[in-house]
Each structure stands twice: as structure tokens, then as C-alpha cells.
Amino acid sequence: MFHQSQSLNNLRRDHRLKPLQIAGRYPESADFNNKSKFFLPQIKMIEQSSVFTEKQKQLRLPQLQNHLAASDQLQRKKIEIRKSITPKYQRRQTIIYAMRTKAGCQINKATKINQDSAIICPKILENIGYKLFAVSDGHGLNGHLVSNFIKQALPKHLHKYLGDNHEDIKQQIARAFTITNREIWNSDTDTNLSGSTTASVLITKDIIYTANVGDSRAILCKFDQVWQIVPLTRDHKPDDPEEIKNIVDAGGRVEQQRDYHGNPIGPFRVWLQYIQAPGLAMSRSFGDKVGAQAGVTAIPEIKEFALTNHDQFIIVASDGVWEYLSNEEVMSLVIPYFEKDNPEHAAEKVVSEAIQAWRRNSLARDDITCIIIFL
Image: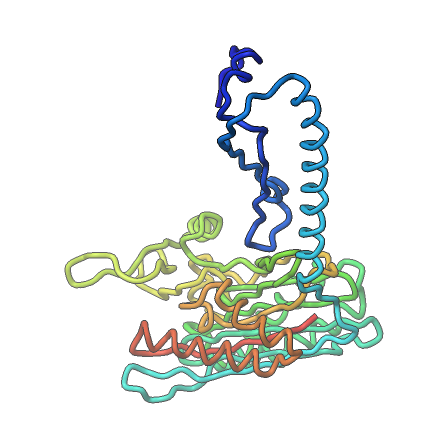
């Protein structure tokens, strides 16, 4: 490039240069949010043997302007074409869904009791169109009994309290969780060292409500020029700063287990202040009476999200899915089946890939459960 101090006469004497030629470079991706990617000028200096006069420059100026105008029109046309071939998904009239589950296995490959359970209530409040989906992941000796108790009790209480008052939905959801946990404690099932997570999704006409305890997870996948993920729940892990505070304030402690040499191993766990129990790898759950003395709670974290036309599908799954597969990986597994309106095969694919991921990373395998909901 020439410095601004160079005069027009210097430009005229430099017979090697001709007018600037400008070309457009278009993005390879379909992300049109960043307009700076649409047209990146590339400037080329091309040799020429003639010397430009002022008159010639004036004659060439309209040509250059016409060239730029034509280039701008071509640019807009290409962008319109690229946008026209970008998939446009619309919300369907009826939600379709599917659930798949697979029991885990021990290190010796022996199958174990599947401690996961799933709730699918597409008409929990039919008169106002509420739909409930949830996954619970039991742990401990009686974890399967706790998760199945939740499967029976939680929808019943949500139906009752939401039916009585569907104005303050969050308060009624929290109430249903609290009463379900109280009933678990008062049941004949020993829940001193047994409990369950739960991730629930309540879909109304225009809002999604999520409530969860533990590390089962729900994500929303949406399409707006590009695929995006919205985490609907937050994993309740003991090393989360907010969760640590709650546990310490309640008199518990958060530490890793240690090997024979005193080295920390494995995930952070919840312990009583002076006793090496219960060792929970989550900070919230149903049941777990001993854990409750260390600050573990069944109070759910409740969120709400406005439904939009960009929202395409929801995935609710136990940590058997999320342990070795990222949110992005799971979403990419579902998209091809979403485009075919086939949630059954989508759920089967997620479970199958989760099993393969466990085989690559562990000698054992956790229970795996997922619900796929096409909006």
C-alpha cells in the first residue's frame, strides 16, 4: 500500500498499477450472524503498461462504481441463496417422544438391577395441556426402589398441586418435590444410604419448567441459522461453589476419597463432618437420610424458559448418558432422526453410543436412560 503522503502525480508516474480490483470471499459456514464474514475485500495490484491521465481516471471511475454495484448485488444474491437452502424447522402441532433404557453391568460383566426410572405423562393436566417428562437415577442398595417411588408419587403430587393452583407453578413444583421426599423417608424402604436423582421437564403451551436434584440432566436443542444448546438443568455436584457452601453451612464436608498413599482419587463427595460416610457424589437427591445430615437436600433447582419457534427437541437423561458424551455429541446423534421424525431411533442411538463410550472408558457401566422429545 502507498502512504497518504504520496501525491496523485506519483501515482500517475507509476505505470505498473491499474485500478483496484475487489473480490468477495464468502463464508463456508451457514452462520450469518457475523456480517463481517459476508464480504471481505481483497485488493490486488495488477501490472499495466500505460500511464493514466486525469481524464482516463475520470472515465474509469464510473466503471469501477458499476463493478462495485454489480459485485454488491451478486453478494446479496449469494447470501439469499445460501439462506434459502438453510434448513427451516417449524414447531410441530403434536409433541412426539420416545424413551429407552439399558441396565448397567459390573466389572465382571454381570448385569445389575436397573436403578433408573422414567416418567412420561403427556397429559398430566389434560385440560390445560401440561406434559411431564422426567428421569430418575437411583443409587445405593435400594436406589431402584427410590427411583420407582418417585415415578409413582411425583406425577400424582404435581397433578394435585398444579391442578389446585397453576398460577404459581414454581412453588407448586417445589411443594411436590418436598412432599415426595417426605413420603420416601416415611416409607418402609431403608433410605439411610439409598436415594435417587431426578431431572424433570414440565411443558406448558408456551413455557418449559425444569426442576432437578442431582446430576441427571436435561438440554434443549434449538435451530436459529445454526444448532444451539440451552442447558435446562445444572448438575448438582459437591464441588460446585454454590453447593459446597450449602453443605459446609449444614455441617458437612466435601472431599475426594484417598488411596493407600493418601493421594486424592475420584470425584468430590459429601461426607459427615467426623465420619467417612455417606460419600455421595452429588449434593442433592431424594432419600439419603444420612446425606441429609451433611447438607444433601431434595430441594429442587427450578427454572423456566419461554418456548420459541426455534426450539426443536429436548433430551432428558441419566448420567449414564452424560458421563462420557458431551451435550454437543448427544445433540449431533439426535439431529438426523429429528429430521426424519423418528424419536424412537434417536433414543436407541443415544443409548447405543453411550454404551460404546462406557466400553472405551471403563470396565463397568452405569445404567443408561434417555427421553427424546421432539417439540
